[in-house]
Amino acid sequence: MATDKKLFLFEEVEKHNKIKDCWLIISGKVYDVTPFMDEHPGGDEVLLSAAGKDGSDDFEDVGHSDAARGMMEKYYIGEIDPSTVPTKRTYIPPQQAPHTHDNTLIKILQFLVPLLILGFALVVRHYTKKD
Image (cartoon, rainbow, N blue to C red; front, top):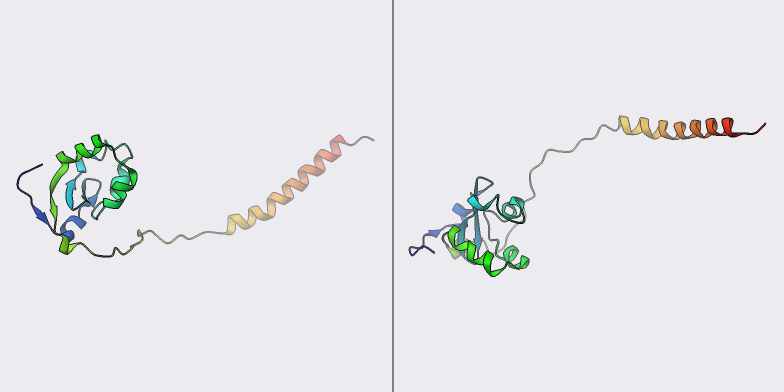
């Protein structure tokens, strides 16, 4: 680890939550894991889900090996200022476009599928019936 510990505000770390710019807070330490995104065994989605926030609980829940913990040293960039970390995290759902359905096709299929089944049954009965 570097001998000079830079102190980061939570608001600064929070901005680094993209695939090309990903910082994590784990046990009060700040890590720039951007170069590790492609190499992470769990995929980059796992790192992105904890990016820009305190990922200590997520990290500990997985039960990382000693080797994984040792790898963290090369991504260490400083410490987090504990007074800037929110005491309670608020869930902010991801933004997505409103989902609209065009139910016309579904209604047509609900009408046609039973008719097709009935027609198929009548054709089978007609050709398999003995005179």
